Length: 514
Image (cartoon, rainbow, N blue to C red; front, side, top):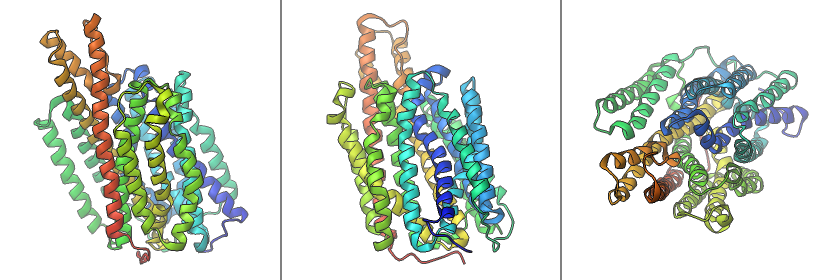
């Protein structure tokens, strides 16, 4: 398969189209975190609704992105990439028009299906089209630019949310997607692997989607009904059985969506384990930091978005350089240091308590954001290079799909498990504080029940005067206690990711996939 230089006209158009489409998908996620408080108020959504809103999209990505990668390898990477972009912008437009949170969740599923076809296409286009000796630099450029745009998402989201225009977070995808489609149609050649036989692993896709959805349902029901309930037992039992069945389906399938033989390469396995732990910690940490800043610390949504600006600056200055270093010296050292530093950043953020607001940012949240950004800047490009360099070109789309699926699965579990844990931590803190309050037992229960809405908890209407002030203080202190625990667990996941790199990743990747 002929490849082109990164600096050629074709190389540049490939990079522009891949970056536009990827940025459209990634910006949607980071901007959405910031607008969640506005969205929650506007659509009267509960805390559980918010986690379903995030996970509806991620469940589709996690279960179908593997088929998306394989489809690109088999039917043509440009064709599948364009189909994914079209579905994504259609789903985005529908999300922007959704009148209820239920419909918004449904339209997020459409976005997820589009993303599953689109996201692996961007990296597989780069990996199979750009000259091998410039591939690391190309991936580093892709990582840096998409991450910069992605981290600009909170700033854009905050500005729109403060103006009462949170729906435009979805509408903005339409012109970006149309521009990417036009470039692909006019400037990029079709790339297809003729060695790949046709065949789709639909049983595998259905099994993993339903299995993950059941586990998510089980976790998100725990705060409302407790762990010792038949609904939770059945959801967990069926979910685990389906995930085990998925492994057996992949072993037996003639066209597996997740070729298990790729995992015989320790670098590929280690990179995906690192991805799972690091992105689970990062996803939970970023979400709860955003909620804390707006709902408890008193930041506006634009101010909340601007707190991530140092992260963006670090990605601009370091990520591409880190990709070049990984090309020359191998990714191992960076993949040990990066997640460990990111974990340290999350740990620093866990110690921030109630502050005086955005004026205290530089002495409170800023140090942790800087350390977290530094760690991720060292990690993103070398991690992608390690994954794509550990398989043969024949499986580049599949490898990209697997790694992206792992990061989405990590976020699904992070949002479901950490969402349940946050409500339990919050409820526990409220129960400790409310017992000494001079109100009735039913009023105490009503106060604790508000924990399900996390930072959007509101004092019950029948509690007034000094008791209302006391309950408001309890909500702030209780949420901060829950936030601190979540951030500490997130930090531990970052450190675990560094351990995976130390144990498994080697600088000389053995090509697999023959």
